[in-house]
Length: 410
Image 1 (tube, rainbow, N blue to C red):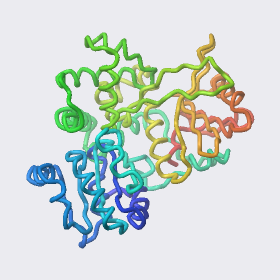
Image 2 (image 1 turned 90 degrees about the vertical axis):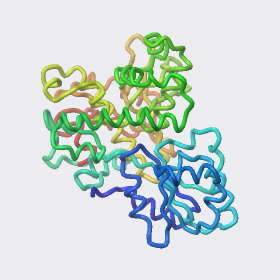
Image 3 (image 1 turned 90 degrees about the horizontal axis):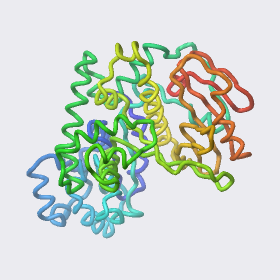
């Protein structure tokens, strides 16, 4: 078992919250973490069991009645249980009453969005971060918001090693496969299973047969601005339908739309979101990308690497409890189109910009977008970090640094 850095957060939440939800994609390790956080006095139910699911759906109140401490796995399969759980924990307010797991973001479901407001703490568990795989909790973001970069330790992953890290992704089952071909097979089976089962659990989709083609279209927009009309034209769908389908994949923790960052001091900013996949291994498998293919043509690697960095940032943001860090992208609509891949803003208003470059060479002009961001955010700007395929930390002016990608986890 890999150490999960969210385990302590679950234990703390159970000590003071009536309901705790571990949310994240299937096969990320939610059930394993929930079992580890449970003891013999806690009843365990999984709604992947058809008999249990039928009982939960047919009589939610009866299912919950009489439960003292309980773990319920895959709660999104019977959202009607949430109202019954609400009534139960309103009568008995002891902390730790229910530990739930969910493979869909149930807070986006209109029927349950308000059911447990103020009663439930949500802890998101994504596929393994590189720090969890190597067994070392990173301090990259914590230091970045102090305007600091850790010195190099001579262990930077570069060239082929970095490509292999990105292609592997973070799903425990996938990275345990013996060969890249076996790993790709797992990822393709996984996405097909999600489409055939979990999509039906959270949405009434009339054209379920279009979903495999749609996901193949979405992967070609990873790390790019989303053009809903262009995607829809390929499947004879209108813009709203494409947007709804993307929302479904986002609710299942497959994709994420990164919204643009805005500031009143600069009006000419793009208003389009940017699409990212939450696991680079899954993205690579659907794209059909291999190590050999990237060696001969690195064009696609830049998009893969940017989604990989996004995923690592999302995981680290989740570990920084209480910082309230948001993540957006920055792009002007001026002739020069200055841009920064990720703008991180904490609840104190501090700004850290992060740019991703799939190259071993960095020049001053690569920081043009970062300098524009620093100009408009003024004293709020803490640091600008360009991650690259190199092995040294190189300063590029005041609070600007080129940093090896592997600094994200080393």
